[in-house]
Image 1 (cartoon, one colour):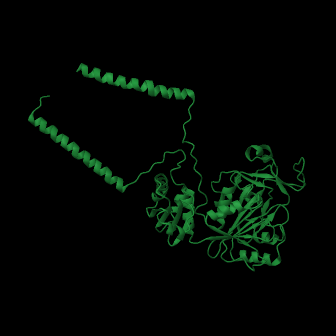
Image 2 (cartoon, rainbow, N blue to C red):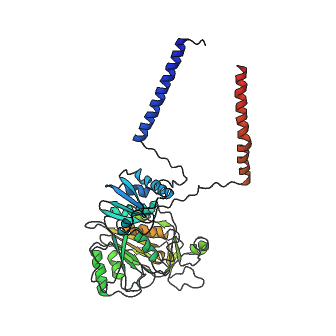
Length: 451
């Protein structure tokens, strides 16, 4: 091609036009990046993305949220917190993050009673909640407390040998109580021998396996609480009802005699749960109810009893927990070699029911479980017991927004290769790739030589 003054000008014009268009494309891409945001999480379990429950919770946020974190000038920790809060900001731009250096502002630390570095204070609409967990669970739980607009008061009936919500024995409920408090509930013991009525601001009354008869005045107080629309969690172990049979009739619930025997646990229990006691009841089948929607955990109930729903005016009953079909209620002595006899009750058996009816301000809710051990310190960590316990509590206090925040495991953070795979990777990088580069260079040189 003959180079002329005209062709040179044309090439200069083309180059100039290319530069202008290239710069315009970069500017347009920059402008689009300010108008639109795209985020992709390629981790195996989406652990860098908020869970569906947290996203649903953010949909309830109608006012600006300020998250104040008390942490020193530690770049890595502050970066981690910023990235965590950024996940929330992608769904709600009205969330603001502030850092406070506790060394630089000790007066504020004292005023707000900050005790741990990394403690977060979440504020919105005049409400405040705090968390010491630098995690999605911690932030979402604190945000849930703020959205509630007040504490949920849960009363535990006392004075009859019930399971102690402050007790640390295997029989007691301290572990579950700590989880409830982390979710924003306010717990207190209630002795109806000294209190005439259940306080009206009680969100939930828990009757956890009394071991002595309730007084007539105490039963009247509980019945009055239910008549006023109160919510109830009743844990009923095998044996006597200690005067609470009238409450069962009021709810339309009847209890089967005997202790449930589950041969399935005796067969595989040592592998799954570390026990082969046939009184341990395995539950893998759940009813159609919000408490157990998408609930795919096995749960274990030691020494459970069966429940039948006889029906009562106004109450809508739903089965929550059902045993496997080869289970039965043993009415004889549970010792030695046992099997199903004529006097026993064949399964499958209900061991958990939920009841609800319309109230003046909110639906009234009751859950009756034929076992209290599954909530105890000794068994709460088995299978899905804790998850089920929290789902039940949240439903009973009308907190359906955040039933659970699933833990996101990090199974893809390591790469495991055997010796052969390591050898192939080494061969590819040390031999094959250099040969390809040399070959491509030789090919380009050879093509140019032929011109």
